[in-house]
Image 1: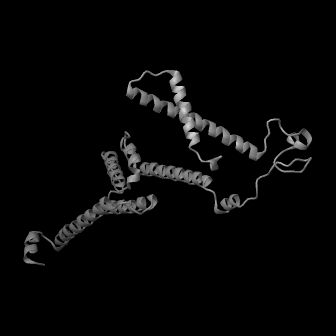
Image 2: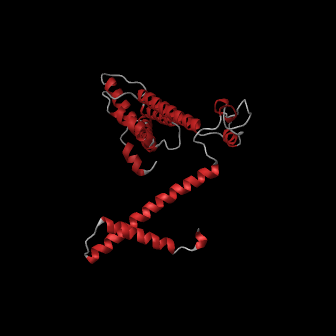
Length: 257
């Protein structure tokens, strides 16, 4: 024993008292160091990649180790209930502090409860929240799978046979039914051959274009007369338009007709 330590125990009357003093001194120092180490682990332990169950198990092991070091497994005395309440509150804080951010909402709900629930009650609440989130995610996955066709079904739609066509049971031709068969009921009164109908459509379009051109010519003529400040009459407008159209027609080569 060093001289400095001898001075600390020199007034003890027996060797037994010296050994007891040494045991209490050094065992207390070692115990405090271990208690501090466990507490440090409790506050530094984060869930991160662990499941909720594994995270809670890690915390529980450290809590049991802390109880063994502090000899607080069993409570007795008048303040036992209050001490137990304080210990539970501290462990609730330690448990919530290391959770991932996805539990922030349920964490806020737990802390707003009065009185604060026990550690086990908090764990049950967290498990319920995790089960609820898993159920929602599963429903979303099922909904997505419902609206995404499989490769087999997509190919079946792409390469399925031709659509059912109308077939007349009288002439056995496609495109119509018996009720509309020309062989039985004749052609419609407004029916025209395809080429004749196309010519009629072209003629109608040409007439519309001609009307548009006439309107443009009238507008141009009115603008010209207004610049010369001459009086304008409807007969003059008609005569000018007819004259201009005649000039346009005479200027077209014979090949056009």
